[in-house]
Image (cartoon, rainbow, N blue to C red; front, top):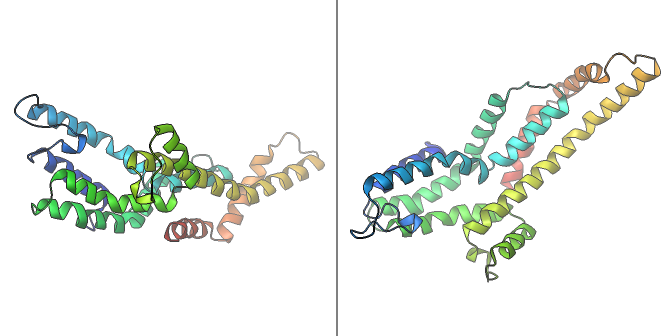
Length: 244
């Protein structure tokens, strides 16, 4: 399971929940004899949840920050569609798996294994399994963003960070990661912006008005990025930002 990764865990968890006595207890829907949902309807709802799984993985994992930074880097280099979106998203996905693997392992040990052994119900397994995820989100969610969503949800002020619900932590984490990703992207833009300004000044001073400065500066930016081993620096800094 540790090697299966985030997607394999949820892909195995959701179909198994459909066969349990309370397959929709995570949603608060009872499967009783009277007033409950039929099995086909439960399967439809669970399959719908699985279609939303990619969006959840992209939003509540380091994938969000990594993807934003890599796209900013490509724009700063001015290489248009190189590397392609598929390459950048693939790199972001595999880096995300490396970072969240310990969190997924904790979720599996605390939630899935006891439920599989019959020691916990689905609802209890969800509560226990969400604790490692909550701790991970708390590490990177800013207090200002958490306070904002507490006010929006009109929820009582929590006595401790452990009392925060996922419905508050998840959007706060997304907002914090977007801010962090944009900050890193702005820093990445600065050295390449200097090159653009220098090249534009030189081309205008020698009368090369018809030649776009971007065409002249692009090789210099790529050369600078290669000489400083830019991919190693950017990816290494991103990974260390999640280890701190």
